[in-house]
Structure formats: structure tokens, C-alpha cells
Amino acid sequence: MAGVDERLRELAPQVLGATVRRYGDFAAAEDAVQEALIAAASQWPKDGIPDNPRGWLIQVASRRMTDHIRSESARRRRETDVAQQIDELVPAVEHDAEQDDTLILLFMCCHESLTSSSAIALTLRAVGGLTTTEIARAYFVPDATMAQRISRAKSTVKASGVPFRMPSGGEQAERLRSVLHVLYLIFNEGYTSSAGPDLHRGDLSSEAIRLTRLVRERLPDDGNIAGLLALMLLTDARRAARTGPEGELIPLDTQDRELWDRDQITEGIALISATLPRGVAGAYQIQAAIAAVHDEAPRAEDTDWPQIRALYAVLMGLSDNPMVTLNHAIATAMVEGPAAGLELLQILDRDGRLKDHHRLYAVRAHLLEMAGDRDAAIEHYRAAAGRTTSLPERNYLMAQAGRLAAPG
Image 1 (tube, rainbow, N blue to C red):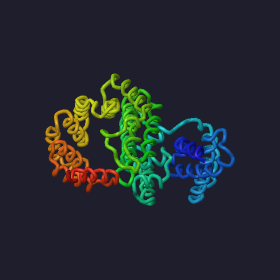
Image 2 (image 1 turned 180 degrees about the vertical axis):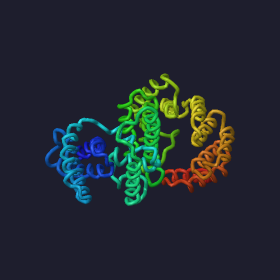
Image 3 (image 1 turned 90 degrees about the horizontal axis):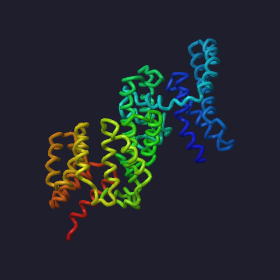
Image 4 (image 1 turned 135 degrees about the vertical axis):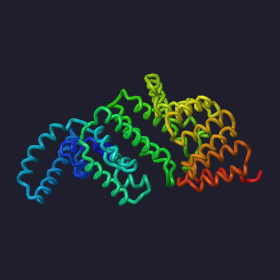
């Protein structure tokens, strides 16, 4: 019953937030909520979705937490005292049932004590409602490995002693940066999978957009959030045109732009247009502006490459990211010619952070082809293909090398 599954995924973080807020034990609350979700998935398709599904789930999760506390109390020989505490807690849980703690939960999952990979996994599990199996499949690791990663993340959050509340003042600004970075990474992994047979994972990119919308609903005046959401929408708008019938990669300059999602483009452009004049633009806003320039071009040859190059120059001043430098080199080549782009790539050769990255080889191959150096282009296309773990990217790069190597 698709409607039940969708409703449960939407409610899961809200129920978990309410349960953690009341009982304070993240790991035990997560287990209790999962049991409540399983019960709902079994009962609701037969009995119908209750009038107050959120309250139903919170009540069931609270009963599970009650059982857990009683069990722990018995083990510690303090069952009588704790049972009295439970009787006092349960009514309070029902009283707080209408409060939505999803944003607090998201901040907790992106706590600075966690690595990016752990924060992503915990966010997808606790806030996104994905199963451990779904997350493991997305990152091409065994279920047991992902389960251990999530378990360690929950233990780390518990050990950190972070209170279940919205951070205040400077702490919120710092944690918000982590939240947005995690959402950005989730989106990127969904839009271009780092490994495996598929170019993208629509469930991950869509979930990142949904969660970013949720953050923006609660912090509507933050320009960085608006910029990130605009970037996601303007980028995701091209998803349907990025692959062919067999899942093969189609580069931006040859995509059928009639397949681009105009509603997403309109929304993304409106967001970034409203955000940019309000103050100092951050990295997400600049990236969104670049995506908007691409999306506004009716044909690839109409792309305003001088504006894109100027925006990448601004972005380089905000971020010491070699990928930004790489994209600036591409834009420079499109404005001044391939020789200028190839000269800029030498900076990355000296930098070393992209030394063995397939994207550096692929871009150099493309610019060498533009410059007419066919043999060197073939060599670099093949080198790029050998370094990527994405099957569609590998196939595309080998096809480019084969096309250049073909006689005639």
C-alpha cells in the first residue's frame, strides 16, 4: 500500500523526534519507533490509516519505550521506582504529540562529533526514513557494514551528551553549516552515484530536496538554505535528460532540453533571484546562479560562458575546492579556447588533490580533443575510464576514446 509507506516515511522523523525529546535515549527511541512503524505497516493497510496517525505512532513507540525502561530497571533492581516515573512520563508524551521535532533531529544527526559518512547514514536513517538496506545499497556496502556505521553514529551522539533541543546563537550557525553540507552530499551522491551501474539514485536526490525544503520551512530567511534548495532544483531539473534508453550518460551539451523540468527551473530561478540581492552570497548561492545560467540557455551554444566563468572566479574566492578550479578551467576554455583551459589545469597538477581523480583526466581529454590532439585525448579518456567506479561514466569515456580511435 504505497500511500501507507509514503505516510510512514513522512511521519517517522516527527515520531522519533517526539520520542527522543521525552525519553532522551536516541538509540532506544529509534528502535521503539521502528517497531511502531512495523506495526503500522502491518495494521494500517487492513484497518485504514487512523485519524491521528502521528499520535498513534507516538503512543505505540511510547509503549515500547516503557517496556524498554521497565526491562532496564529490572536489570538494575530499580523496577518499582522507575515504573512510577513511567506513569508520569506517558501523559507528557501524549501532551507533546503535536510538536514537530524533525529539525532538531536533523541538527542532532549532523552533530560535529560525527564524520560526514556517519552523519549522512544517520540522517537518511533517522530523518529520511530509509531502511538500513536501502542506505547500504545506495553506498554499495553490505547491510552489516552500514548497520555498524549507523550504530556507531548513534553511540557517538549519545556519548557527546548533546541535548535534544535546537542549538542557540553561534552554535546553531555552526551546526546549520554541517546540516547543509550533509544534505548537499546526499544530493550529490543521488544525482551522480559515485559507484555502481546507475548514473543517479533518484530516491537520494529527491530525499535531499525534501529535507532541504523542510529546513527552509522552519528557517525561511536564511539565504544559504534558499541557495542550496535552488541549486538542487536547478540541477535536478536536468535529471530526465542525463541518461539514454539504456542508462547511458548524455553530457550537458547534447541533452534534449525539452526533457528538463521547467517547474523546477522556474522555482529554482525564483529562489536564487530573491536570495542574491539580500546580502553577501555564499557558495550555494553562487553554484545555484551557475546552474541557472545553464538552465536558461535554450541551446547549448547559447550558454553564457563568460558569465559562468566570472561566477566560478567568485566561487574560487569563497572555497579552496579543486573541483571549482577544474570547472573554472572548463569555462575558461569555452571563452578563450582549449589552450587557456589546459594551462589552468596545470595548477591542479601541482595541487595534487585531484592527482588520480577521473574528472581531471576526463576534462583534460575533452580539452585536448578541442585542441585537435587526438592521440593525447584518447590516452586521457582511457585513463579517466580506468579511474572511475561509475559504470555509466566508464562506458561513456571509453566510447569517447573509441570514437576518436575509429578510422576516418
